[in-house]
Each structure stands twice: as C-alpha cells, then as structure tokens.
Length: 36
Image 1 (spheres, rainbow, N blue to C red):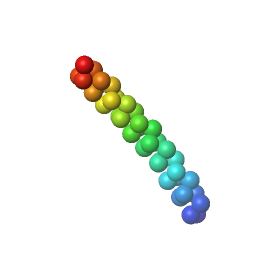
Image 2: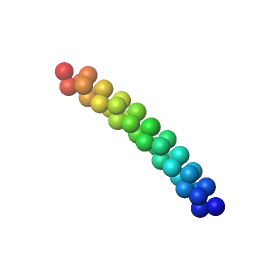
Image 3: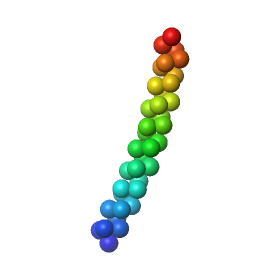
Image 4: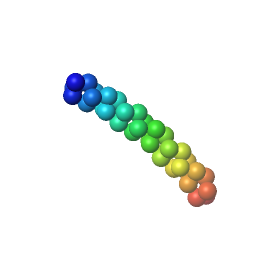
C-alpha cells in the first residue's frame, strides 16, 4: 500500500517538475524578448 502511494507521489512530482520547467522557460523567453 505505502509503496504504491510512494510511486504515485513520485509520478506527480515528475509531472509537476516538467510543467514548472515549461513555465519557467516560457517566462525566461518573455524576459529575453522584453529585455532587448
């Protein structure tokens, strides 16, 4: 039981990290465009 919960939480963490990196890259791109 606890092992399955741990696997699910790891999957959620990976998805969250991916979406966070995408948002971070998107804002980085905007800052580059407006920074010029």
